[in-house]
Amino acid sequence: MMNNSSVEVSQLRVRRGKMRFFDGLDVSIPRGQITGLLGPSGCGKTTLMRSIVGVQRVESGTVTVLGEPAGSRVLRHRVAYGTQDASAYDDLTIRQNLRYVGALLGAPRDAVDRVIADVGLTGQADQLVSSLSGGEGSRVSLAMALVGSPELVVLDEPTVGLDPLLRAELWGQFRGLAERGVTLLVSSHVMDEALRCDRLLLMRAGRIIADTTPKGLLADTGAEDPDAAFLALIERDQQQHLDTRRSRREETGE
Image 1: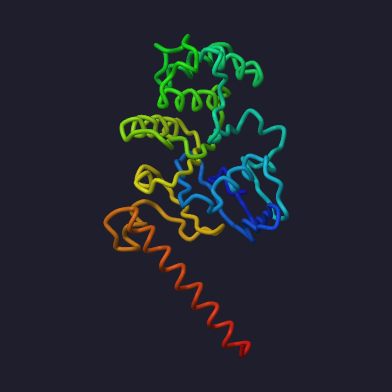
Image 2: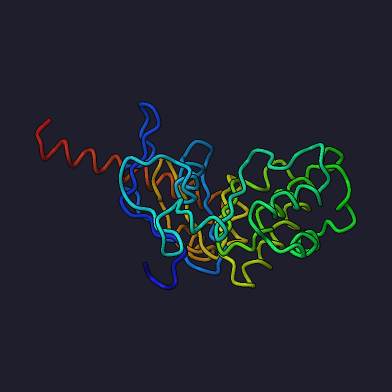
């Protein structure tokens, strides 16, 4: 694996039931940056993330994470995964939740207070999770992902349901992590979050239709905002798909 990559996915094929999500997917995730994985619901973002953290059954292909096969035991302390579902126990305080996770990961005791401070929850540390607002709950989930000081953090739509101010605060925390050398892969279907990333992977129907940067996305499409740019890419992808099918029909005489 290249030294500047945290993740290398090669010819990944994933089938869930009768549905095939990926059919030979290739992608790499650079180190020390925020990579945004964007696209509509159902396009395969969560399946790709599950494949990277090693909890998704794959049909074929390879996923290499920090130089090791995805899901390897040695990655347990190096990779963190924040799912869309609540990850904290409602009947425990923030501090108790983090101490529990820290004990499982063998993290030093001072890691709990450090992470609580990092996500801006020092004043709420001894509150029950059930008493927190939605934005505070999202920060607890982030704290639980960070308590083991991971090198790669994979977050599945961490800002869903948050108001613009809370989303901005959370993205500020993501930026601080990247500046400390942590690699982040963050999924979203909110296209304006694309502008907060260093790198963009745009998905549609199980395929990467653009691997670019925020500036490159707008320049390539001539659009003024990410929503318009993504729609332009979808239209371009649909046209290319139609052209390919037409060419195949002409070649086979069908």
